[in-house]
Length: 332
Length: 274
Figure 1 (tube, rainbow over the protein chains, first blue to last red):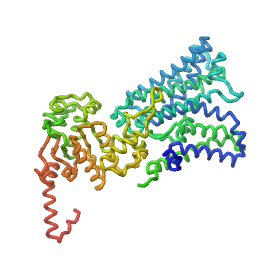
Figure 2: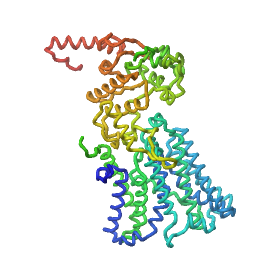
Figure 3: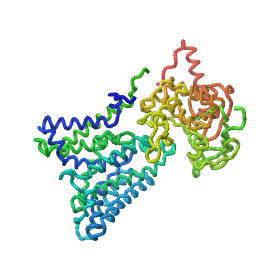
Figure 4: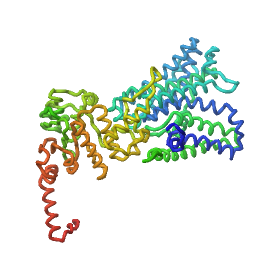
């Protein structure tokens, strides 16, 4: 069972993501005249993938659990504004600013989670509500407190080293965070019992609850994780760029959903993998940023993303069917 | 099997939702190693009765006894801990999870220590496959297969094996054969017999009289929330039971009509009504 087998691999959720990743690069090389050396040496798409990937991981877990969180779109600017207002405008120690940003993420996550558990409103609608509400809160709050929609932040050297420096002058340090988080998430989801609970909850919530899984607590924890992760990405951005704006972040909503689905997660829950989410973010970043390395006009990139999404979803459906009917060799 | 005290007993249980009475004066007993078949047409109150047994609903009046002692379930979890397991038509299994993972949802075996407690896939798969095979489903031999790839009968069997493995004493089967083909249903009925042989008390809910007759020791027919008949194996024929469920003589009359027609028309059934 440990030996590598094609059958085993094809039925893994991330198989489609591997194919998409290879296909997109092949497409760029064949039709865009990309040199692989330039593409893999470039930082822009890796930086893009890391920022996207950190948000996509917990949102992907939520999707596996059968829920959705789009309030992340507002949590990214909320995270950067929190730290910039606290540590930039009010000159509090940077640690206070960081804690403030993360605490704001936890609070919004708790609100999302409690609403999702207590009401029967779909989480898409709940988080749409918090998305708009947080946007309003951040804009109004920053105008009242600082009389501006953009706040500078001067982070001390250690904070820049850990959260917002450029390695070799171009790679954001957040890439390391992304890799570390992917390993941690991968371990928890695929190797511990908590991961099993998430899959069970997404597969059939009533049966999962009957089997004794604390579905409510688990769901709230996942919502907290996703909005805190978004807030973290915003915080790192503010430290890196020395300033924060109230706008931005909305692109992340669709970008994360696309990369998660391309990564092989079933939109209705119960199926997916951390490796798939990781590869999905990577693939999305290649399409989105890699186009600058090609002769193809930048304006085509959304068309490619759309086609890729469709192809990935169709492919994933096929693979899932294969997974269901797969019986490993051995005699019957 | 030796002791005559029923594992689970209902005494004069009523259940109403607000002004609507759903169950009237239900008294039932299930003993170890016995299959009680609950028969009833749609809307007869079967599901309310199951939910009362499984701790989802509390009876409005009357008592539930376990091993002769009155009990009150605070919820389905509580009933489960006391040994009452419900298996629904499709419930309890997760189509996109592996057999091993699905079997151990909520009680995953782990190895290692501290934060590195790892889900023990090998043990889980071995135990799950063995538990199912002990019930005679030998076609399941790989715990890594996804549950959704199993047939309906195999999924039912997996769910029943799971309940038994985790110490169920009373097994409530909610229409386990309703959506299954003839062969698959036979499969499940064999599993029910095996559970009975192991000394479980089984409450088997169905509206298929044939299936009930195949495994039942004791029958109760539910009509409009009340027990219309309560009899033991062999006391009534299939026709009588069907009539009871339909609430009258209509079915027998209809069958008699068809039979007379066929007798006088060289075995041809009557043409469909115009």
